[in-house]
Image (cartoon, rainbow, N blue to C red):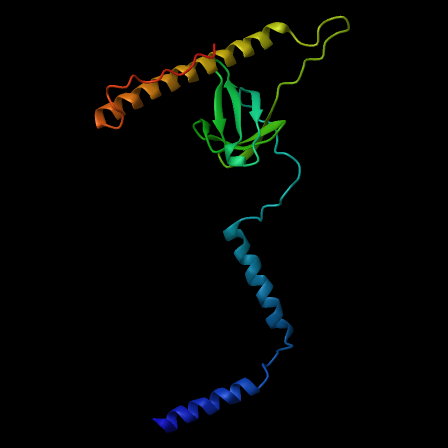
Length: 188
C-alpha cells in the first residue's frame, strides 16, 4: 500500500511540473465559439440596459400622485383606473390582472405588463388657445374630490380595524374591561 501511495505521489508531482500543452490548431479555436453561438438561442438575447424610460402605456390609467421614499419599497402612488376610484399602491402591487406596479419615480411610474415595462406619467396640461385657461377646472376638482373620498374611506377602514382590535384584546384579556377605550382625536 505504501508503494502504491508513493507511485501515485510521484505521478502527481510529474503532472504538476509539466507545463500545460497549448494547441495552436485553428480548428479547435473555431469550435468553441461555434458551440457558444449554438447555445445562445436557448437563453435568448441578452438584455441591454437602457437609460431611456420604457414606452408609454396605452392602459386607461391616470397618475394622480407619487410619494417618493429613500427606500423604494416604501414609495407609493395614487392611480385611478378609468371608471373607478383612485387607489394608493406600492411597488409590486397589482393594478389589474397581469399588470403590476414596477417602480415609482418623481415624474412617472413604471408598470410591468406581462413581463414588459411601460411608463405612466402625470397628465399634461392641455395646450389652450390664447385667452383661455390652460386647463379646465372641473377635472381638477373631480380629482380633489376623489382623493378626499379616498382619505375618508381609509379613515373609516382604520377606525373599523381599531375597534375590531379593541374587541379582540378585551376578549383575550389583553385590555382591562373596567378601563374605557380611548377615542382617537377627531382631526376634522
